[in-house]
Length: 123
Image (tube, rainbow, N blue to C red; front, side, top):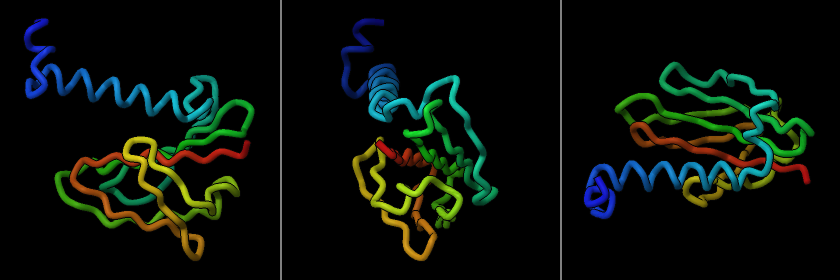
């Protein structure tokens, strides 16, 4: 097992490193992933699962958008019902890429099975 974890090209290493990356992204989201915070499913598209997570204090939020298909998806997410900071450029916690809403809508091009975790902070 240790040899497989030490092999950078090995499946076990890639899964382990990917999990560590997700945990680091989650930690970077302040308190948005607080297990006691509220969350709501955001209706986007049948091919996409989106959830908006809120910190208990209401200051940190994470809009998590997941393409659950093997096909690329073009997605439009209304930001009108999101916290006011969602109208600012949003940083994807997984890639560092910035996204900007325009006209109350956030447009995303999602690769097959891609996840985007957008951090919204009102601090």
